[in-house]
Length: 232
Length: 215
Image 1 (cartoon, each protein chain N blue to C red):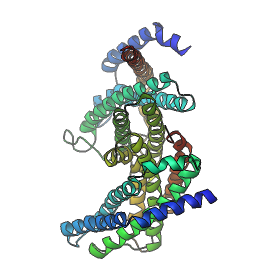
Image 2 (image 1 turned 135 degrees about the horizontal axis):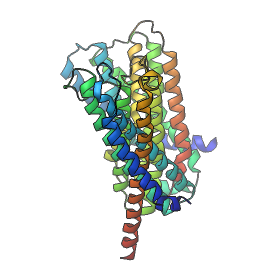
Image 3 (image 1 turned 90 degrees about the vertical axis):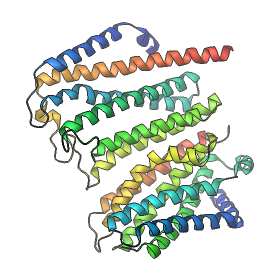
Image 4 (image 1 turned 90 degrees about the horizontal axis):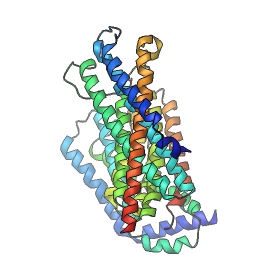
């Protein structure tokens, strides 16, 4: 069933339309003039969506790792690893867009590239553990062994990442600069007006669809690679 | 239960026989602590003391974890035939936890001897050390089991375990900074967080280790 949906064209067209809408509406529609944030608030349509996509695609990777351990099929392993790769790309984009944003809003304008914020650290830990996942995969030659060991590590890393994101902001001495934590009002309460919502929600959907699209292409490429490799 | 104690006895005997590994760990602890002493010469703020202490603990426990596993692959073939993977990992977690606890207490003693000791509440500090080291040793045990399968030794273990160690370390660091006060308050929540982290890591090891067992 999933195969059929992945090959279908309609959602890819929808994805492109949504992203075109995101870029055009994101840069052209009016945004509320907030102090400090000003026009940078438009980054919401890009930066936040990267994290949504990353978490979504990492979760897919986790599901297929669990699936692999329960029923070792090569396909589950390919999906798990390619989703992890794709998630890493979105994670890095999320980090870069976030760093650009914080440069103009937090700390001294235009000077800092990093801030002591739980979410930044959590994001970095997530990226580090998934890079470690790739290193681990590269260091094992045997395909089945690689798939099993990597699946074990993937589950471990995902759980620890979630725990980190949950525990760290509660440690008393760290307040997040992000909205919604430590006394900061969330975007959803009153910052995000209806017009921004009209752009933000389609943007999230569009970026998540794009991540699935990229992952599905990666998966097909990897399948072709392995097929060719086995034929030789 | 019998199997658990039998595996632990085996580990202990192995450890006692290879005196070289004991000496290596003690020497390692001494060297890293002495280097920090040379670099800082006693005038350490409690915050710096705390940060350095936990960094030392990571390095020392990584070294200790790799030492206690090295060169054991051949006898694993024999153990495969005797016990179930879940029993084996439980015994390993308990044994390594105790072992690492001894190592970290030795590290703490050396550190307070050379660099000083600003700890106000010994009770809070030692409970933190106990819980943190227990979690670190379980995580490293699992990471090393993964790294051995990956064919890489110490380097691979360091890479794959470091990001996963961070939640444990920051919780422990926060707690031990609280223990610098004579009568610390508000540590129960963090202590509970640390305890549940330990339980979570142990549960993950218990669930996932059988998949690393044999090829």
